[in-house]
Image (cartoon, rainbow, N blue to C red; front, side):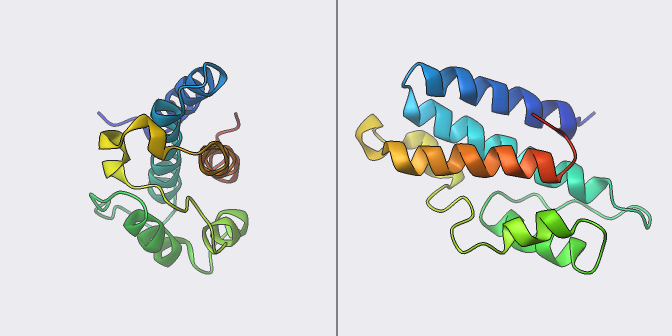
Length: 125
């Protein structure tokens, strides 16, 4: 059984540990997965019956989430997803990159967006 809430919080906490250890590659990946899980939690928490959750990753998942929450109560999340740099540079394939590809500023952006996504999805962090 999927538990996107718990998974989002776990991935965010793991990302924080990796971030503090200067393991930017792992931290970036964990923050992206935290954001994805938070988005899926937000999508499954919407009223209106069961819909099939898309089996996608960022950035495509952000597009689907925007469509699902448009005009609904989660305006903070909608605004976050509409920022021009939301999770910029993150893809599921980052896990295969060399460590030298992970610049601190990019990972810090992933960290901040994952944190804000968890908060906007009402998960806290």
